[in-house]
Image (cartoon, rainbow, N blue to C red; front, side, top):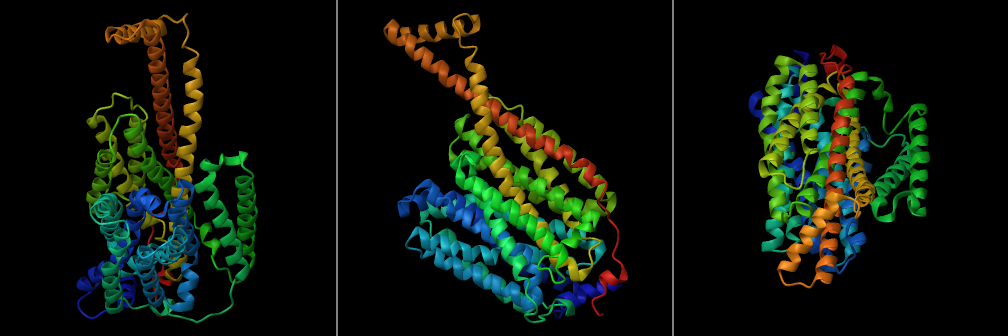
Amino acid sequence: MAAVAGAGTAIGAAGSGGVNKWLVTLSIVLGTIMATIDTSVVNIALVHIQASFGATIQGVTWVTTSYLIAVALVMPLTAWLSSVLGRKRMYQLSVVLFTVASALCGFSRTLGQLIAFRVIQGLGGGVLQPVSQSIMRETFPPREQAQAMGYFGMLVLLGPALGPTLGGWLTDNYSWPWIFFVNLPVGVLSLFMVQQFIVDPPYMRARGLQKIDGAGIGLMAVGLTSLLTMLEQGEREGWFGSPLIVTLGLLAATTLAAFILWEFRTPTPVVDLRILSNSSFAAGTLIIGVLGVALFGGLILLPLFLQNLLGYDATQAGLALMPRSLVMVLMMPVAGALYNRVGVHVMATSGLLLATIATFLMARFTIAASPVQILIPQIGQGVAFAFVFVALSTTAMATIPRPQIQNAAGLFNLVRQLGGSLGTAIVVTLVDHKTTTASANLVRYASPYNPVFVHWWQTFQAGFAARGIDPGRARLQALALLGREIGRQAAVIAFDYAFAVMAVLFLCCLPLVLLLRRGGRSEEAVSVSE
């Protein structure tokens, strides 16, 4: 009863509880979808933005890097900002920031302006998902939370699923500024609905500006900015062969270590890391970080594999990625319903095992991979990620006291975000390094003493000669063709190796499932009237 009462206090809208719950959900989902769509939409339009401003590749990548850094910086601050402004007011301010910044991005006349407005957009967007999760936790009673998170996840995942298609259509038929202008009506509608249907519980109302943990905020800002810049720019700069990357790495390590020590010592931490002493929350957060590595890593790997090695164009590659997102969307409500029947351990274990198997299937891709061979692992991963997401998002905070939910949601989403950045950096580096080593190994077999190599060399020479090319040129062209084929095979080996590494990461998460606890809330946790 306390949980239901708490939910009623949280939503505080007129009308029946059933209507209120779903109006609250729709109110916060609009803002979250707006933020999740934005990332995938912008990625599609980067080439057009680069051409519009005459920018370099290194310059235009800051359009996404600046946004990711701003999102990561503000996520762990959501609990502190809620205490200062009140959660509802903070959410409204974030929607306003995101919406206004979207308009300014569309009107940008220089790359510098666009990057600056993307930072503002990220500061608004980074708040939306963790706050939405905490509101969802309080709106639904414990027995309905898994199903609620399933529907919430289904709606939120429409963003990444539809983003590339929407971005491509807007860019091709209008111009790249429209990928930002499309946020304006959604932002206005979200702002109106939040004003109408969201009311802060007593412990989430504004307490005003109290003692500021300036040292904690400063250390976190420097550490996360250095870390994300290193991860985003490392491949282009040659990683630790670059003085810049070495400096960023050392700066990130020292400032983040100092931040952790400081937050445990100060009586008023801006991010309360003591919450990680909850083993269920800590395990769930670590697993979601690994899921972020694999999810974002796969979003980078598969399109590159399809376009560079199988000859897909951008549209075909986008369509090949869509089944995973659509399956995730469809399976989220199913996973929510199953959670209450089978429990967190069965859900998370089956999801991780299915993700491992599906990713290992991707590690067996060849140049001759058929569309069906591409599709099957995507379906498997879609089901797996839905199971794991619902299990983790429901369980990780199930034993967290209500006043700490906002802090927990901020950390949970920050780790997922960092996992995505880390995954992108890892897979690109793995593929690049493994392609080089595999190519060197294959070249050793390109010898006149290797009968297989000689057979194909002679076969290609005969083919060129049959086209009327003289023997000398035919010999050289056959050799060049073999060189290109060696490069393709080396790339296949590299991609398969990267997929295998991601599969092993899923497997390594299985022991952590044992630390997850489904448990119910205590009276102290659910009471909002004290």
